[in-house]
Length: 224
Image (cartoon, rainbow, N blue to C red; front, side, top):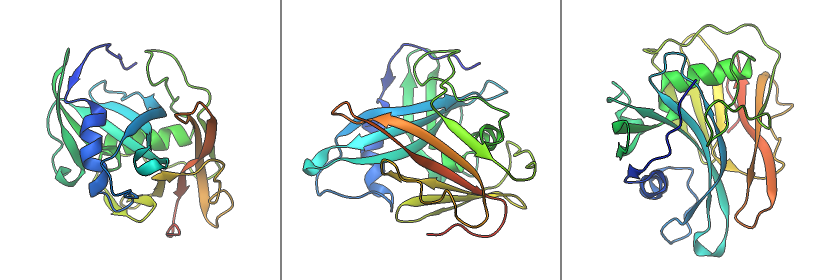
């Protein structure tokens, strides 16, 4: 079980992400610096207890409009070899010391646990409290058992305008929706989709939203 510490990070997560998000091809620029609201998300446990795993939903309210983004993150005590393109930034944790923070689509530990969640072998955890499950995150899987993603697995990542695609060698293709729209289930009946993950978030005005955030294909290619 991952331990969540009530402490500080310098620079903070939203500070790092405000600088990182505009560099992504799926970021919808407003012509202003991002103004980020932490609107939701959940965590997953690393079975080895080494890597922090968090799925964060952020709402950018800059420019007089609201755009919601899915940002999976991993927190590591040392650099992840071969994942330089996925580095969000480096921060000092008040308890754990220096942490290297990565876009989780580049991290095989997150990808492995995401596949475990889709198959019912992992449980989504509350974003803020240790040892508390988050039942609002729902998964559906109707494909064959998937091979385990080992920590050193090489991933292939492609960023589109709205999604990131993560390919595991001789394995599945994951499509992560980066720009979230409430009620969006556009992948639910797509040909070849064998896994689906749905989660909710709360907008800055207090309204509740929910959408399909991850789709899995065991072969072929996801639509753009």
